[in-house]
Amino acid sequence: MAHTRIKLLINLTLAAMAGSVVASAYASSTLRCGSQLVSTGDRAFEVQQKCGEPVSQEVLGTQETFNSNYRRSEAVRIEEWIYGPDNGMYQYLRFEGGRLVGIESKRRN
Image (cartoon, rainbow, N blue to C red):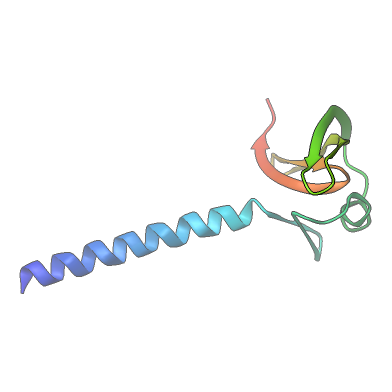
């Protein structure tokens, strides 16, 4: 009986840990701007409409992408937008080719 109870506790703990990992991954792919949400995959102009002007907007460079179907390459622009502070936290948004590809929250030093 005790062995079964221990297995149940371990399974519940693992399930809770897996849920928190999924929740933190989801939290990093969306950002709340007032009553609006922006998500990875959104276009830059959609993010700006929902969140307004960022406090900082910087072009980091370009990245060459390849399309194997058409055997051609294309340079896409990489940008970083910063929003905040909101309760001391800044939101760093990364765009590639005008699409939101990453959202990171951190305290600025």
